[in-house]
Amino acid sequence: MIGDIDDSKAPLLDHLIELRGRLLKCVYALFLTGAVCFYFSEQLFTILVHPLKEAFGDAGGKLVYTKLYEAFFVQVKIAVFGAFCLSFPIIANQLWAFVAPGLYAREKKALLPFILATPFLFSMGASLAYFVVMPTAFHFFLQFQGNSSGLSVEALPSADAYLGLVMQFILAFGISFLMPVLLMLLNRAGFVTRAQLIGMRRYMIVAAFILAAVLTPPDVVSQLMLAIPLLLLYEITIVAIWFTDRKQAKAEAAEEASA
Image (cartoon, rainbow, N blue to C red; front, side, top):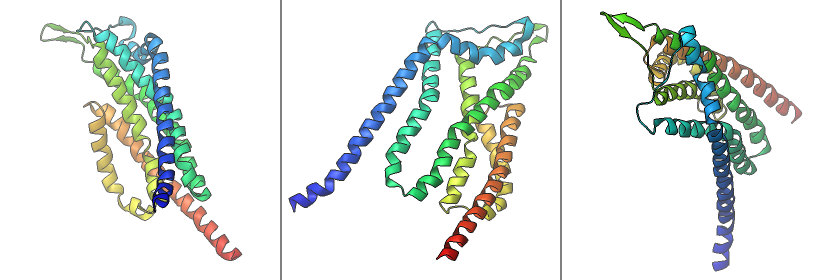
């Protein structure tokens, strides 16, 4: 009896040891990339502040910090943010390496495209936020500078508040662009069908604008620039599911014919 219990516990213990090793690799990757990002934090902040600099134009602008320690913690936040972005492929690879041995070959083949598409879609969303949405939104916000009731109105954003806004934009658009991966996985798992997604289209329109209102600053420009791509991605996902369903139906028909 004791031997049977020990044998039953051994595989679980092996899995826990493997999980611990892979988690440690993820932590090492985060610390290493965080140290590198902290070393280059000034250069990274120069890249992040570029859309605001372009929005200020030739008149120039400036960032301020209202607490003595704020500038230091801005560099720390940049290092943490950069560490998560740079180490994400390593973390995803460790997760896949831990899960893959428990999957069948067909399941691996089905999941691998979604794993590969995740960083690509996140990069697309982040790029849209950086190159299109942030410059447009900053131009809109800075239009309110000038004179009001005989008083001069000038934008003096703090470095910490600006970094928080930039991170909010990048994460909101990057994560939102992962919606096709989520819907495709739900479809492959049998939780939703293409017909159900088509029927939910009107609710998706409302949900997209609610999500955009929650994730972006409270201005119409930013919300539209997130809601509209989300709706386009939703329609693209419906088309992609139609192709995958058709391909799967052909594969099943071929298997039945060969049998």
